Image (cartoon, rainbow, N blue to C red):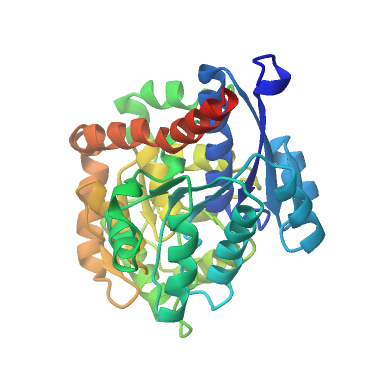
Length: 388
């Protein structure tokens, strides 16, 4: 095959939970697109992404890429038939906690690509929980036939190993969002680094809050509200609620803010952010915080990427797995959260932000560096096929 510019173009279909206005999943897509662009540029080929989306017009407008309907058989067939490979991921695609249709859909897309003779790549996926054993063959079959398999934690790798995927073909990498940069032209990092001690003392510290609905009785949100009230009575704080998945997180945030009404300590306030759909704008919101109380995985990942001290509330093993990679433990779970212990920990973070950053910077820097690995491996594979 020739080496001219046209021969260097590779169309890659990207499958994931895209087009649903979930900031975390949209951040995954943005991160994958940026990593593919960077790696393909450095390796001398051009990647032409085609995103499977619930809202192709919105996805195309947001990212400037080709996009087709993820659930339309004709669109899916045409995209896969004309592509040079399929990326599945990232995110928690292969799990059955949210229902029985998720695993069959994502493995079905991979299987169809493989039947059409296209190489498939699992991109930093979070595998599990998988509670229904009849799902195991679906996952095992497509993973064993993939050209490259990467997962975002050792627990996901162990799960794949247990269901029969050879461990030697699995690479453990960070979530791709660890490599997401702030919006182009953002001055935020410079502004934060220049914020002096006088500025810090003139206004309450900003604490980001990212909550989601989990328990049907709302008891977890009640406990979260009590914890925030306890913190506000220890010291004045500005609580800024960050909805990662609209409209559900917006409604949840408003419900918790209603529980706080009239109960916050003197000098403390609560407000709701409205950063819009662009994941990098939400990243900018997180970067402005002095600390973050997060239930959403990508809220915690955003905070780590921007060196914002965090307290995680666990509702799923993926929260504990990510925190563990930073040497942290969750402050509580959806079943248990001690308000006074939370207030103690939050006050300590706010009192010594620099200490927290110094302690965790090596682990965070390593995760950022490693977040490029899947894109690097995939582009390298595609580049090698050019010379065959």
